[in-house]
Length: 154
Image (cartoon, rainbow, N blue to C red; front, top):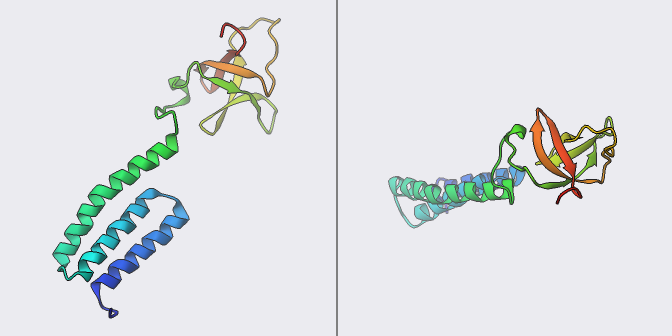
């Protein structure tokens, strides 16, 4: 294979996409690298530039949507619905309270973000929330999670 071979250039582009994939962790670059290798195979088998581009485009058209589907499935996990905190997408779900670093406030951790937890009832007799307590999310008021202890009425 000589240095000016189109197959070599397709392979080098595929290798560059693979290296970028290792740095980013995105399945899309992996799909592009596979499509570039398909273009390289067409060039190696003697296809002209139009055939190479068509093969690359078809491979991208198949592989990139599959990669995006796989990336979404990995990113959102078992709860594919998402929204802002006020969207109540996880209403009724159980959480274990954690402590916020700078003020030790009891918080729930929702999709990697901490939201301060407050009891739904305002009784003076109500027990204070502590990290480690299990609670059920009722709703959001702004960025505060309104919760109730998991033992009540569950």
